[in-house]
Length: 326
Image (cartoon, rainbow, N blue to C red; front, side):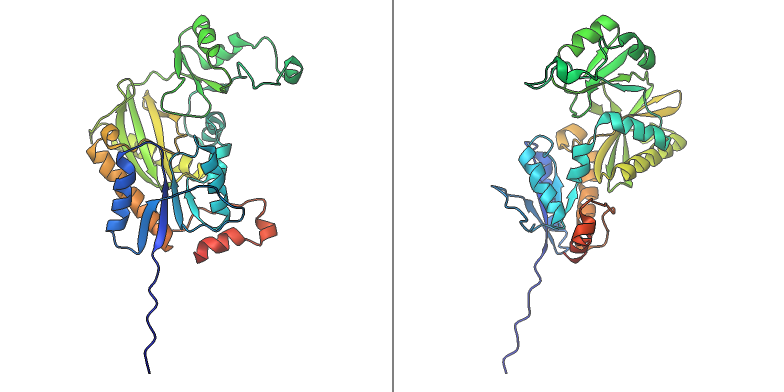
């Protein structure tokens, strides 16, 4: 009697969605595939997505959906189909730097004083009658009395130092604000710091603290840059913030004034991972950390952070069950 052919187990798939970055994507794919862990990484290819379409990927890394809305729609369906998306597209869509300032404060993480401002301009169709809830004129004196000057005027969402202004007086604030168009802006206290760090956070708990010069936008390699006490406090703050936000891939920036680390910016769910930007040491670290994370998720060694959706009750917990069975 002929023996039955042994069924070959299909590898678990990890998908990558990227923008124009060049050094991270292929290096990440090669890193995952070289582990021979039963997990295969590849670029996701999309060209129109059907409703209730199954997702072939166990894990998807999202690096660009904040700028390509179609990808964001695809990723929401991928979550519903049971894929683990890094980072969760539902929370990322809802997030902004103003609400994060409140979250940090309630969690006991030091944060600069922050005010969210009404938009300078609005989409077509918004007229004076549409804005009857807005106080006019804006109480600028009260705003700057709260934040102090100088302060930073920057978008409530976004990154890459786009549309960021350091303002020293009201006239300069008005001039910069008048250039912001439909962007929602925050005004944030400027922390006059003696030390500054940017931290990779991978998987919400794996933290790499990196000395950073924001004026030069340059990473520094100095293992003795911080005291152990200060380093450990920053690591704890990163873990607390990422656990609260649910981000598995993030960078967090801290300006250190009088020994206190202030969380300046921690809404970076598609952080800089370019070799030529971060340098060999930090690039190798984040490549290893990301590779470990996706393999652990894909193989079930690590479980995703529990998330409840409004439709869960109607679907009978389908998303959680699919994630466990994929």
